[in-house]
Length: 462
Ligand code: ADP
Image (cartoon, rainbow, N blue to C red; front, side, top):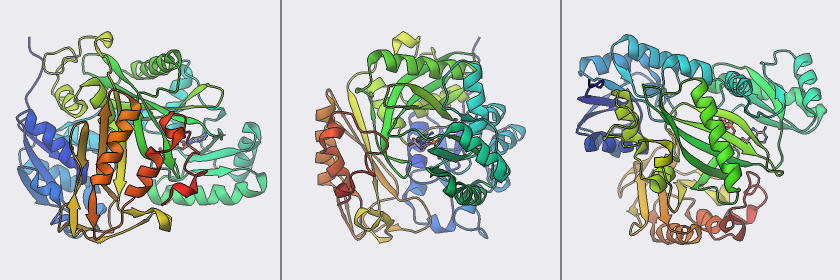
């Protein structure tokens, strides 16, 4: 007996490149698409890529417009929407949104809200990982409330320590502390930042690892208890704990270690019977030990590189899983873990409208010329950039994701460089020259960069 429904209309509660990415997946699946947009996004490109689009948050600010749960759900109900895809950021990790969708009879394309509650918080997910025998970074797995508690926790870990927001994301609410004399000041500022960004100021403490690699594993689960991993990504090229370039496979790590990390990711996903797409993140220290850090219960910006090497459309799979299709259905086509055989190398570069020579200050204004470099081996996931478009100061500065794919890492890097060199943007500054500097770097080409690489190479900030 068939156990799936068919969506007729999907609303994307997001904007920019990820909204376009989801619309494309829906159109390929024969599903009608509905966009929402803030008044600041009235002229944004993503609106035109959906079959219908509606203004939301008339009396709200540019960010709040996309965070208004009740308005989005009531619009979805009015327009006969079957399902909502949250993209990344905004409401994507908000269990209340997922719950309210379910209560309104709308499918939330993501994991169940109870799972988001269980794993969305970094302290809770660390406890789950530990319970299932997956290594975690030494630390104190509870929120430190008082100054005495934070002092005690930091002494227990041993300096340097890192203070992290339980609800954290995007590197916010995170502080590295090397000396006890700096702890209380940093504790207060981490709390303030977390409160402002997430509305919750729970902070926990763990040992700060010097120069680790960030390795993460893509997970996909269906509603029938089947879970697979789609191998790992190396996301160590970071600036201020934010990813800049991501690639797969993480070829500088041994085959055995990569397998171990992927198996640990599966352990965590299976422990919670994970459904839909998610990512389990690890740090690997200079001795080759790996530690779970967090779970992201949503699609990630860098899902593209995994798609290129596995041939699996992760966004389509999310939508199909949400309709009840099992992983081994002909529509998704993953008959077993062994069936997933990555081939080649893929590198994603985040081209942003930031000025690397001025501490990556976001640039805004009219794009007078927008010409991209495509061609063999290049995939471009664009946001709102086109000749004549305006980059506003309200949203993140991602302009286009350049994804290069080839049989060797070096070739993929060459393709990425070629594509970014072909990119012509006039009117706003971009980080293109900086990306090329990194792609040309010997350490990068060996796959050896750790999360401290960019900070120790300011000469690359052209
Ligand atoms: P966020 O959710 O804000 O992105 P993460 O927990 O995913 O935060 O961590 C982001 C990055 O911060 C990691 O990739 C790593 O570079 C750095 N980081 C986090 N925890 C540690 C740690 N214990 N030691 C060293 N670096 C860390």
